Amino acid sequence: MLTQEPVKIPDVSGKIRFREKDGNQYVQYLTRRRYDREKKYNAPDWVNIGRRIEAMPGLMYPNDNYDKFFRRGGETMDGIMTAEEEQYIYDNDTYGMYSTFFTGLYNEFRQQTRKRVDMPINRYKAESINKVLMPLKEMMQGEAYAELLGLISTEEDEEENMNYSDVMILLTQYKSALAKYRRSRL
Image (cartoon, rainbow, N blue to C red; front, side, top):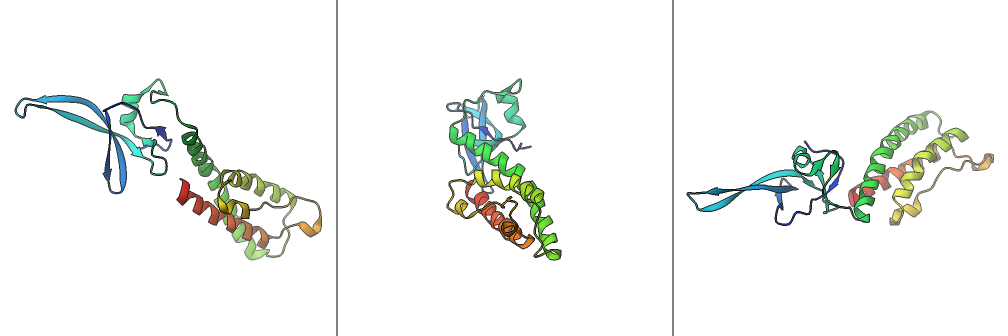
């Protein structure tokens, strides 16, 4: 069973190989070699230890066999991750956590927009929405489309208050950006 927490692929010279099956690359570990007397050579025993992450080739999603061979007391023995790999894990975790909140917000506002199209939203709702949108915008920083993403104004000025349909347009932009980000980065 694969876990959802990525780990670095172990750097064990000559004992790691990759096998492709159904469009996925699986990481295999050489556990031992058995001598075959009839054929007069060593036969390797390979065990799957996880699935390689396509977007980040140095990382994989481990399975239970990985725990048997590479974890001791909850710590991994597979080396230090690069900054890029750590950023990937951070982005993946951020995406997973905030996309759940975002989906709930999106669905709620989609329903409310049907009833209250031109009704302004209050400051509390604007701040609550921004709490979800800010980390997502930060995560997508550096992408070309990130500049197009805005936040909801929380000023007291009546003229700048957004209504439900304005918020729905903003949330729809974020939904599209998140889908694009997920396809290209995660």
